Image 1 (cartoon, rainbow, N blue to C red):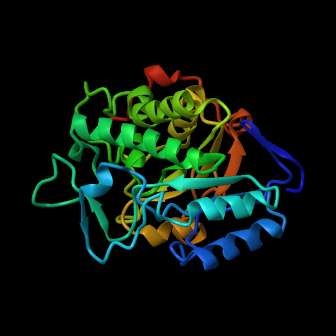
Image 2 (tube, rainbow, N blue to C red; image 1 turned 135 degrees about the vertical axis):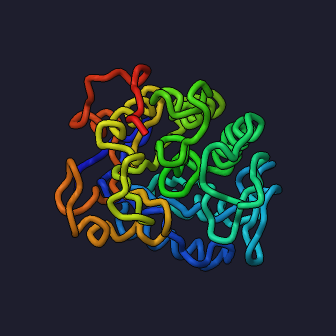
Image 3 (cartoon, rainbow, N blue to C red; image 1 turned 30 degrees about the vertical axis):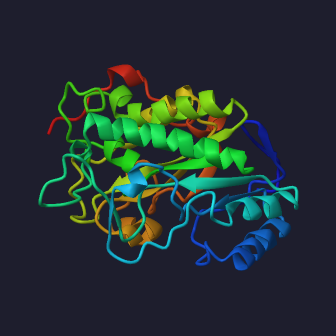
Amino acid sequence: MFSELKIGSLTLKNRLIKSAASSMVPNEEQKAVAYHGRIAAGGMGAVLVEGSYIMLERLDKRVNVADNDMRMTIEESPLAAICAEVHSHDVPCLIQMKTATPGIVYLWENMGEEGETHKASLLSAADIQMYIEDTIDGAARLQAIGFDGIDLNAAGDNLPARFFSRFGNDRAADDPYGPATIENRTRIACEIIRGIKERCGADFVVQVLVNGAEENDGALGDNALVNTPEETAAICQALEAAGADALELRLGTFAFHEAQFVNDGVFAGYGYDGATSSAPSTTSTATSAGCSTARTPAAASSWAPAAT
């Protein structure tokens, strides 16, 4: 835990990383700077800032808001000051990019009267390209104000997760972003990773948050369409091959956001295939080691989904 860890171009003095959990004061510069500064000064290997900001230039203008949207843009937020404070303690500073914020619902072109169903089919081809381009552009803007890298949230109810998992990927079998192969299911994230690396340079770190284990918390045990450990390993391999510098693994659920943080509670009843009585904890792992214990003989490009 206290040994150095190399993630891409960064060398962390230890393996303690502040997560992207909310500070509850994202827009209050004095408090937000002090909060992150004290954590960095406490000896963290790296600080990961929450993604509670408007980062997707076009998509963030196409939303339904249940509550007042208090998010600031990258440029008007305290993010530059937060990043500078963390760096003043000789600690790398990254930030999470996400699409799952309570009260914020993106308006996809294929959305019907039922509203957001967290299915991949809601996105048109234009939606997908806009999301990819906006994410790459947002990463470049974050780099411009000092961040060392980003954490792409592709877990839980965040957008890429609905493409990774057969539970959410209901696109046509011949769709390039559909469920037929691991290559197709990870295409949206892989295009983002490659695009960020091309735009920001190889030294700009890209970490990806992935469902290390999935559970249908809306109907416990009904897991015919959730990812198996072997599928998850193949997904991780594809992300690594695209250029991801690190993977962060967590429990992925589909009905209740809070269930993602109570691993023992979800799996205590009957365990999880490939784990003990709980899902893997949220852990940041350099990709050179992150998938080495879970390699699968099947190539990602030839993966076939389970029969439904």
